[in-house]
Image (cartoon, rainbow, N blue to C red; front, side, top):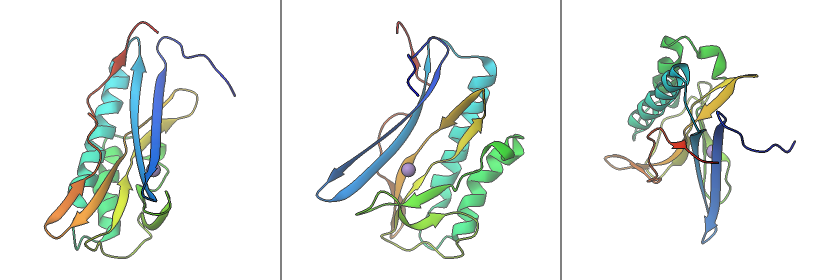
Length: 158
Ligand SMILES: [Mn+2]
């Protein structure tokens, strides 16, 4: 479907590119014209979830626990049923590859693994929001490969 962007829209931007055969991936959610109090609250929940996921995604972490760290933020806020995707996916020569970051992937994170942390809240007929960064597991923790701001961005004058 095609649609012209309008005031009060909420837009999930999902970018990627390839460099030397390796894939990049990133999502940000932006607001057009204005933002409601509920939308601001939901955005802060998604942001907190994403940050908790990043913090948990370190060398030696049990993947279901990484998923839980992010998912619990959304669950505790009462939006659990609106976050129905995996938390993340591996990325490298393909944009989606192992390891999936989800409850059923009962493995441990190893140095050199690279994957997304991309929680979202998707309410049908209302709005969807997602924040996605790529995390690389390092010897001492991790490195976040995307540098774009995650602050609320309101676009005016469309
Ligand atoms: Mn992704």
